[in-house]
Length: 188
Image (tube, rainbow, N blue to C red; front, side, top):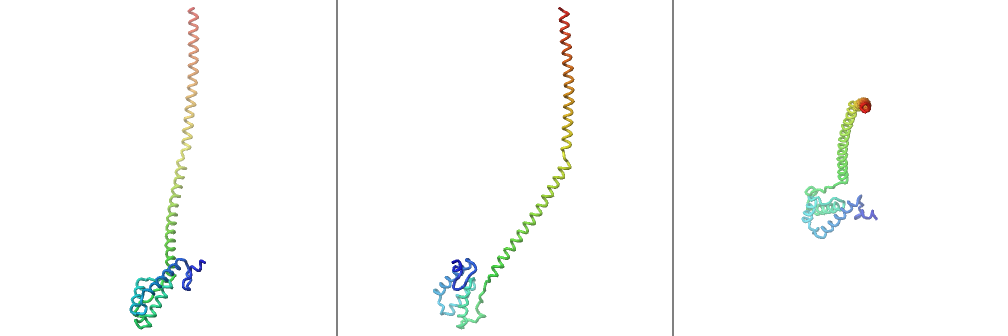
């Protein structure tokens, strides 16, 4: 069923888009045949020239019609082949070349993006390596550990001094209480 959609006037087209274009040109050819006096060679020359100038047809359906008009003009001696414009055929290769150039442009764009990405990643990697070197070189864990140990040592020393002073204070209190008791007993 799909292949039948691609066949128009005995020509098989490669894509649905090309077949739709050919169908439009077939309708235009039918319209021109019905509205144009094709028995008048001068009128045919005018129609032919306008169609060529406007680059109206792009499929074999339109080119066939243009060739019929050209043959009619030449066979009726209305003009020679040198006096009328030639039919310019747009090949599929042209479309393929356009697709090819688009693909090349895309490849160039992706290649450019890839190159940029590689450069950015390279610099980011260097920055990370430098950060790791700085972190290793200026590792504060040794200093922090030493500081922590000195604080702990100071605290331990302070704690020992405090304990010693507290014992001395308790002994003094005990001596004072003993003296007060002895003074009280003497006074009684």
